[in-house]
Image (cartoon, rainbow over all chains, first blue to last red; front, top):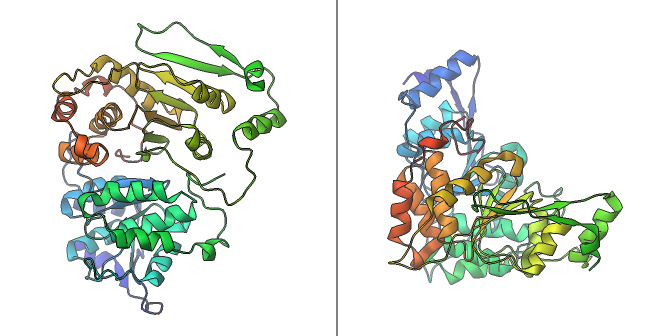
Length: 214
Length: 214
């Protein structure tokens, strides 16, 4: 694909194996070239085109979105968000089509390999959630999309911990978690959020999110 | 209450009985007075205070929120959103405590009296939904909170029609509707959204929402 020739992919050494990133560098990118790249993924000039957000898509806060795994049908919608980065919470390699979409739209991928488990064997790695939260809270990465496979458990835990930092009460955090997890809601996830210690985030400058006190 | 003496409440003649509004006018409001008003509703100086968003609260788009009926426990959270207006979709009068909260925070109320009905007697007044949508789409009213009683049906239909204007496909519109309505999801609501004709909104300048094409 033409895109492959224009972009350079970097795999910086992972920080303590917590996070893998794909950085997309544009050596000589003109406005014209950008439009051509866009067309690669949006060749349909039809103004009546409908958009298909990914499963379980929602806005979390200003510049922060969440969803299940996006596939090619969701790309034209995702483009409208003007994403700067994606926080991906599964250990599986990112599919080739998705990597190409990231390159063409200069989106940086932050991958935190959290295993998908089932109760009673749930073990959420707190250190990975903490590192992912730092990425999500950094406005330089906004707009950012958080996703795992179905947007229920791993994404739900991360957003729940973000809400704790925003000082939401647990009732409201669980209300939101359960809205996305529905019949698959897990007590173990909710216990993880309840026990999550936010004191290490006290030093972060005032949260830029609209739902935090300002 | 002191607040009552400081604010003037206007009831402009309703436009074709579609919408009632409460406008709050501050004749001589200094910054000091505003802070005092704030304290009326937030006397707790505790920095560790937790926030309680209303039931079914969520961000719909930039400057647009949705929820169930807010009560006094939710006021400190709602204040953090810096709301400019509320779109209220029930015919019942707004409770006195909520009216006081609006006055103290200079929030304008747009009331569209849509009756709460149960299947098979659901009859959603399309003209009211259209008028409410115009208010929601007007950035001069942002940030705006849309709410009914439980944030499921009336609010769900209004947001679903907004998504149609944003050109979401029906699958995604229903996915979002069902997330909030859960076991109470209604086919009649979904049929209403499917049949809703958005052509009259074509003249509206490009939708300012983040999820629309830009």
